[in-house]
Image (tube, one colour):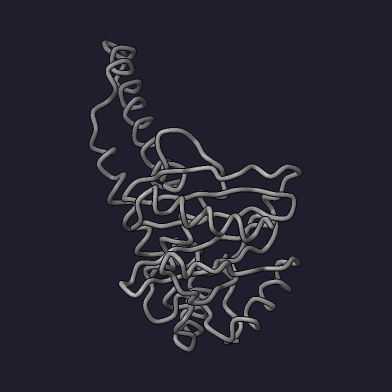
Length: 249
């Protein structure tokens, strides 16, 4: 396995500009010696730019008619307050871009996380995942997640196993497995033990913007989410069904 990664929280704080000068300098020194973490930082920044590009136009929208009518003829400070409310709402959407990554209805948090992980890592070329011996890698992930992590066989759909990586979760570690076709298309399978529940749900679909699609299911051990930004819903469903059948034997 590669050298220990820098803490995820530190990387996000660095990307968001929340580190003081001393901590920023120290982290940059470490990043210079750890190209894998530097690539993660670049990927996070690219994702943030895409979110800002998607939601920044909201800041230019006029005040909604219903809000404008409510402050019409009122003191200037109320009109300024209305504009500030619109800007605050837009800023919230940008900061929580993940919350609007899917439309139109809210979906499970596991689908949000799977979509983010896919967007960040599937685009990487140099080191998208750990690519050690398959058995050793899965044993390592199993130890970290404290459950048996398996890589479903997706060769029937033309996808070969590339590897996997450990991810942070809200309450427990998570894992991401990646598969690739000869044409470069990739799918990822997110494992989130913190999403376990007493009864198995069956496959649930979540569609997002820019072609992002996720099929997920939950059982008594874990939550699983298969994500792709390139496959049709029908094709992704067939692959998710294959993975579901193998993991729920």
